[in-house]
Length: 445
Image (cartoon, rainbow, N blue to C red; front, side, top):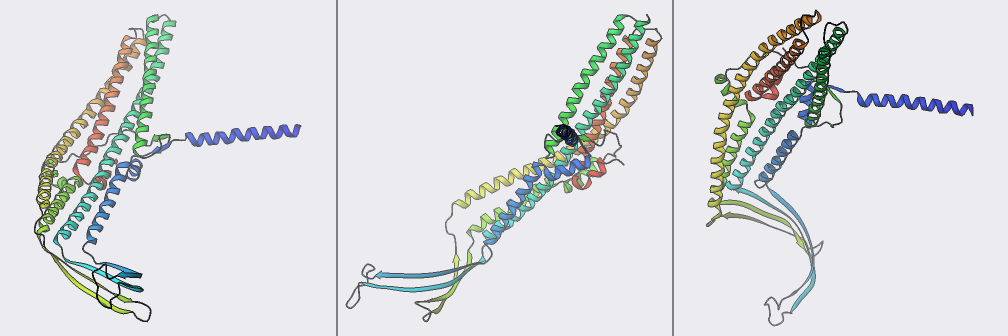
């Protein structure tokens, strides 16, 4: 009985230890850097995966249209056993039987066809090539946009984490000041109102801390979903929100390079080239087509009676009347006009994005400098108010007011840092080539 009790105790201890290890493994957060977040997004985000399937689909379309210009070869094997009613076919006469057969024959044959001149199929194939190139550029643009979005969501999480850190410091300060008010009241140097006022401020900061922590966890959930991770994956950020200077680009000088580097703009140009090829294909529907067909094989009634037979045939086809072509031409020309308008508008949009990114970068950098100076002043104000209250010169209204000023200064600085980081991301996106160049803008110097 005593031996059984020892085994039960050992089993319980091992179970608790094992459960503790499993729980520790489950709650251990994954520390995520910005580089890793972008890498996961490029690999697992839905937009990138969908854009890649569109490239694969258009590759298949191109291969199918090219197949119409390549040789087609078929093999057939025919084994036939039949009777023929000659009278039903109108073959009658003396000594001609009404029915011939039954008899058997076999036919083994290879058939081939090759298009020699077919401008319609040729231009359709070239149009599909341009569509495939456009899809590849759209895929690259999707990757660039995912980098922009992943960095933005990581930035949101960084700002939320910075807010949590700031509010935690406020709670610590409020706890210290609430204790000071209690001690001052106990010594007769402050009133009960001062003590209650300190406790109210502490409760308010604790409530703000709960809200900030919830906002931070929510931002991590959004980030995890965008990266293709399970919402239950525990995450934490390995990089805090920091400021690093980035040189602004001259919009006029960078516009030409951006037009060449932006894959979304290049994709529209390829779509326009595809429509031009489709317009040529539409015009080619009235041009003659020439093809060569042939077959060769053996036919006979048995293994001893097979004879080789074959045929070579050239076919020239000319379309004389086709009203469908007029409607097709109108459709393509309308799409071409619409696409030209989109290209012109995107040109203006890229110009606007560049100029706005440059303005935001300069403005947000100035905001960072101003808010940092204001933060130092707010910290100094709180320190002076705390000393005055400790020395019994005034009540703690000045302290609570200074705490509110410090909270506003901290929030303003966090917002300025976030705006500057977002302006850097926007500048990298607007300049084009984001996947190649983003590290120069997002990484610390």
